[in-house]
Image (cartoon, rainbow, N blue to C red; front, side, top):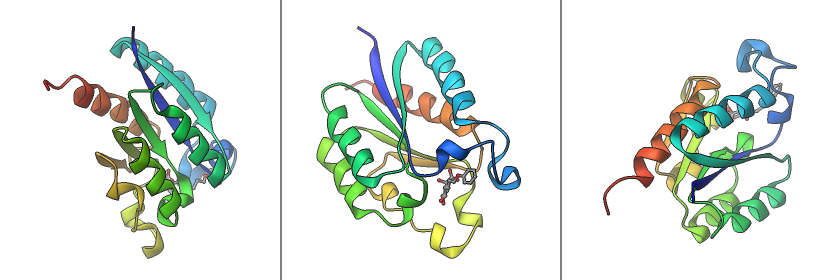
Length: 148
Ligand code: CA2
């Protein structure tokens, strides 16, 4: 059975491609989902691709991922910088997690330099726009196929 990966997107990412193209580009979340689906196929993964604006809803999706998915790719949006609750949810399910951001959060305002997600993630990919999701799928494939 193919390994399954949950790709989870946080607040305001549903607006991608419609506003602030100078910061976030013109790619929509639907474009990113389509590209993730074709990349996942080449890697032999199944994916579930979700977005929510709610912190609690994101936490519920992470809890539900336990036992259903082998890994998590998370762009938690602004909750990245604030949410101990999301960090705890990732710790609790013990799923290998790759953190993704479209923008290079370290070149932006100081309040974006802090990430609670990084403290529990395998690693962080940021600054490569939508391509970061493809990189995250490769990173998870590499991690999940490593010899025990
Ligand atoms: O760079 C990223 O991927 C972020 O996670 C995006 C978040 C931001 O709060 C993080 O610091 C970095 C914001 C997503 C907002 O997306 C929009 C898209 C179009 C128009 C307005 C917001």
